[in-house]
Picture 1 (cartoon, rainbow, N blue to C red):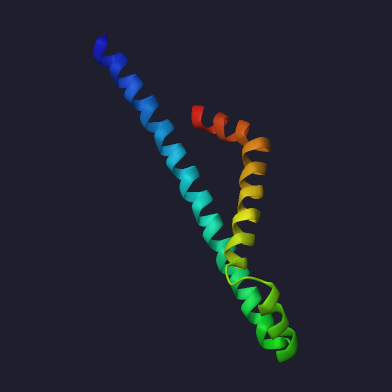
Picture 2: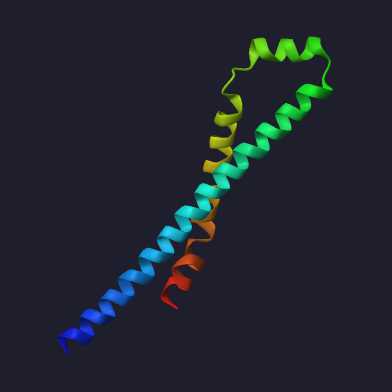
Length: 95
C-alpha cells in the first residue's frame, strides 16, 4: 500500500514538474523570439530611414531600447497568459 501511494505521489509530482518546466521553456522562448523580432524590425528600419532621422533617433533612443521594449512586451504577454489562461494550464496538468 505504501509503495502504491508513493508511486502515485511520484507520478503526480513528475507530471506537475514537467508541465511547469514546459511552461517556463515556452515563456523563455517567447521572450527570445520577441527580442529577435524587435531587433530585426528596428535594424530593417535603420536601412530605410534617411541618415539624418536615424542619427536623430540615436541621440534620443538608448542603445538598449530593443531589449527594454522586448522585456515590457513579454511581461505583458506573460501576465495575460497567467491571468486568463492559467485555468486551462491547471486543468491540463490534472489530465
